[in-house]
Length: 168
Image (cartoon, rainbow, N blue to C red; front, side):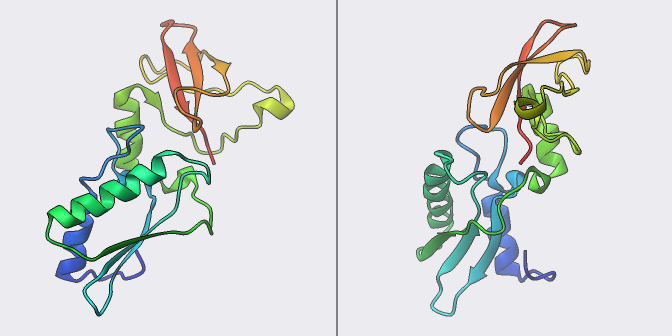
């Protein structure tokens, strides 16, 4: 957020946004994902929420916008505007620590720092940690998992398949 000191109404807005989940990964909120860039309370009473998609073609962003508006309307804010900005581009670094823990508990390997998805270019294996048994003895099965922002992996130790949230 742009302001370090939140007004009570802005703080309330953040609490409301903590209830809005990602339609593709319902254990994560939009706050966990870091897609909320800013919240502005305009003079005419409009709540303006600025979001950045996880990637420019993310099909979930339309539903996220609808869900943000619905949550704010339900809380009594009738004038709501959601603006999408693409610059700077979203990065997995914006996923909160709480969000990373939620991903792991849900069975999705969170993005690992310092692990860039260059596998397709250099055929280098990444040591992705299995969210089930924490082994690094894993292999990529498919560059695309259940959604375009995830890859499908398998643990060679526990033999469980799992999604890995790709680094951006």
